[in-house]
Length: 102
Image (cartoon, rainbow, N blue to C red; front, side):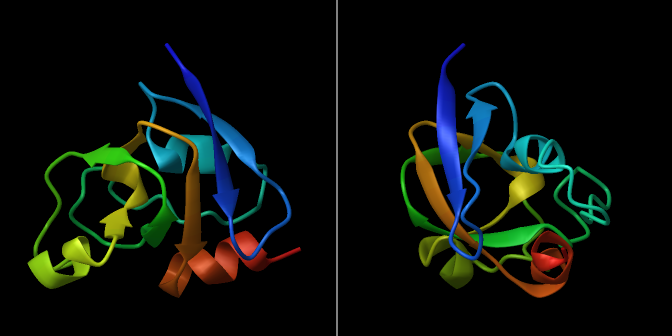
């Protein structure tokens, strides 16, 4: 197991996530209230983020939530994404409201 630093661009608060955990699991440990976790299976889309930097692998995601074009541009569902290096990401949509809440 390897730990990587995940940096959310809108926060000055990187968090660790192991390569065998999803980005969402690590994000939940930040302790922010109201982190939308949804289905945790790649179908609902509430945990959509954009990877700006770093390597990762993703399990199957619903194309209704992340189109092939979006995936090519770095958009993923945090519940289906595992880090393979340190990651810099931007939270969007429902995830943004929860993560940025103080």
